Length: 116
Length: 112
Image 1: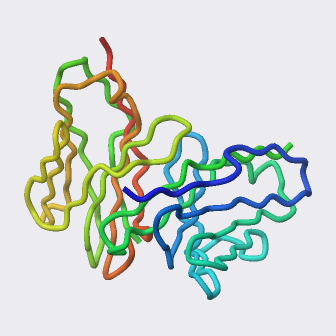
Image 2 (image 1 turned 30 degrees about the vertical axis):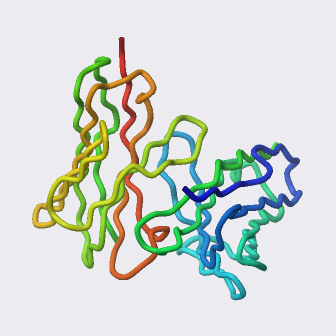
Image 3 (image 1 turned 120 degrees about the vertical axis):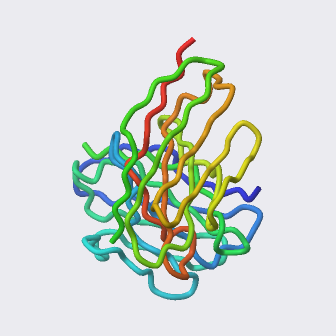
């Protein structure tokens, strides 16, 4: 199956700093990628849809100025958490649709963000 | 929005069969996914149902009844490695798989 990578796998930062997380589709092109956040013992919450070459679409309640998404190529989407605070500590997961676009999505391994 | 309900926790014995249920209420239903997620890892795709009936894939099977808004994931010959969270996700209308709404997940513990 298709492979999606994320980098870094974990990051610890000080409050007020910005953190960039990369999501790459390694063996396929992904015009659409998705960013999720998962708090401990909770389910995945879709934050935004990342569209190659255009602006991301954010879900209700997600601050677009705080969570900057850039999808500059068909294999890379980045999520930048700006001015991170302890409440932003979470597991961030990206995914990309399969080539068919509908019946399957492939998840990256996730990035554990801890903000001190 | 969609309401998706799954049991929070289940426990089963190695070698046994377990059924994890998922009920949903939504308009414009267009498919239901099951994912497995081990602690600290990302989810992995298990199955996809869009028509009524049973889809079998090795030890795992998934069933869907659209009229009842109901699905289940059946795991046979349980192994210790099957201990994980199982997520039910519903897609609506003509959207990408990634736009699905996830249930809170069912944590399955397999005991020897």
